[in-house]
Image 1: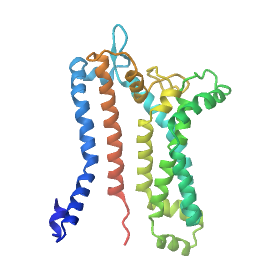
Image 2 (image 1 turned 180 degrees about the vertical axis):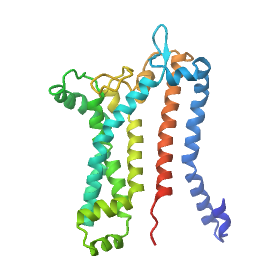
Image 3 (image 1 turned 60 degrees about the vertical axis):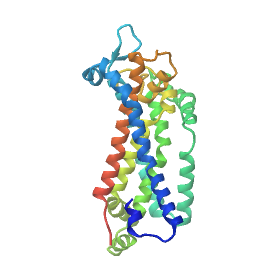
Image 4 (image 1 turned 90 degrees about the vertical axis):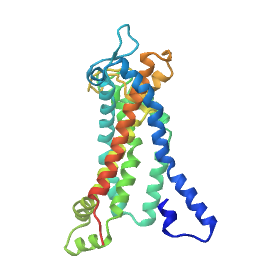
Length: 300
């Protein structure tokens, strides 16, 4: 309401517009609170039945077995494995593309390339998932012995290209925010274009680049369809990219379409996994914002 007190307006329409904008800007916060509140009750019910220590440290996730175990470690391992493979692809390619777009292309060509990347990022991930399963996996099976039909390797490789626009576009924007005077000063000292890009501009935009990588990791962790289709749905505590695994998102898809009775422990486990996923992605987003604000270079 401070914005309404700063400059009293003689026009009621303007004050009404400001109030509407203020209410609309609070939608994101209210949505986040709504998600937390909608999950919290069922999460509490789950932890009344399953000790927190078992949930965090047990090595098995078998909610439908005769003797169920609810250790989230296999789901976390699968999630981090796919994310690591995706970042292994997206980070070097995305940063190379960001440097090229930011430092070597004219403004017109830069806008076109970034527009194409944004369109690429809009491709439905179910398309990427079936591409990984039907095209990438058979190709990898010819060169990697023992590779399962459903595996995190093909899912992670394809996901890396799916999140590539997040890295390249955000990193390119961060590099573009570096003042041209810094580039010109480096050129005046005799630096070559690649030296200016890699030793001057990239370090100056480092906070934005790191934030881009963290946001891409958050996007990969929350990805659903690619891993549900290509990585499998068998929770296994392994870091072998050839074996079938399950991630938190793929388990949520599997459980949401299953036959767990409402009110059962397996039913509440769905909300516990969802809440864990929510906290993880929220923490990464907050970390990215903190890095940008804390380490951003400010130029006069």
